[in-house]
Length: 228
Length: 228
DNA sequence: CTAGGCTCTGTTGTATGCAAGAGACGTTGG
DNA sequence: CCAACGTCTCTTGCATACAACAGAGCCTAG
Image (cartoon, protein in one colour):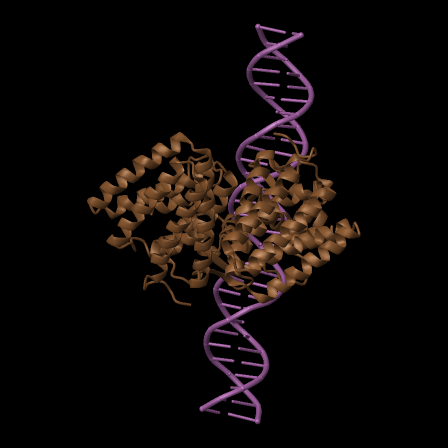
């Protein structure tokens, strides 16, 4: 739950309290709303004790994020991404993260490298201790470090948008990684890091893409993924 | 002007008349609002003869697109992208169009290939006839064909979002291409097309990236580009 | 029994009213 | 002359009222 809220950030509220948009998104992602369920404006306005006007604004944003579908004059409904959309999103993820890894490698920032080195070391520990939660957190940090390390704010914005669209799916399928996949995943992380350290932006991009692709395959072959 | 409206599409209004969002965006992109100019809600509501409520919703969207900046309790202002942001956007453009070219090459769709072949042929004609307007249109079609040819709707969505952010800048700097650049550009288009025909997705991606990068260099070295 | 239409309810779409904050400008005290 | 303060106006932010439409269910005619 808390993780969802952290992921959902990316705008410019004064960082003190969550924006209404983030709270509505968290509510929907919380799982209380099954796909296809109606999300009435009056319900949300009562839930959050505000009027319909700000609720409407938030829902419009969420529509743009692909999380809900607004049928004019009918209502707003939770939208479950189709398998095809998930494939498309992972393709995009591959492109964006690959691009980021390449840019980071070209710049060769020392700070990010040390963060990544610590990250892979701790990932090994977490894997050895079977601490799935900590491991997932470290994976998230690894990817985020690379994205932000590219030093391209627009890329970060688009990436966050992308991840918000994957968020619902990610919650459903979390901890989908099998032990074997974890080993492979950490190895891939090490490869990416090595390329970045070598300032081999070409290799870093290829390694990152390969890693994202492999991860996505894992999720997409998962039986729980809808098949349409 | 009309071009702007076409570019600005991408949502799901019944295709009959333009949505308010598109009309507001077109108005701002039309150039009547210099960067930094306030965009009052009441002004827009009078201009379009609607109340402030739908205007507010449109402005919120435009804020997310990066076209305007909403300073809470103060007002909405036209936002001019900084040079750094433009660089970032072009980096992203390079990544997305490269990705698209690669995906299209892998699929090797015949229809798109024939469209592209006709496109480069007509581009030569337009260049020979010094028809800058038609040439620009063909360039636009070339890029759009590749993006849509990747058969990835999410990629198209992100690309449109990106181009909307570049739209203002593009209008200011349109026809920035010098004759020499036009020759190089068409040659690059041909290279990309050749790679796609060969189903060399690797080469297609590289060629497309190279092309986008070269084009962006042209724009970024233009003296009219703000330098901060 | 079925098809067509009608009503009725629930929802969204828009307009408008009101309050609160931000900034400009004039004013006043030092 | 300058700085600080107070007021005043313009803007947004939110709440609420009303209109209009979609869809479900029922009712009726054939």
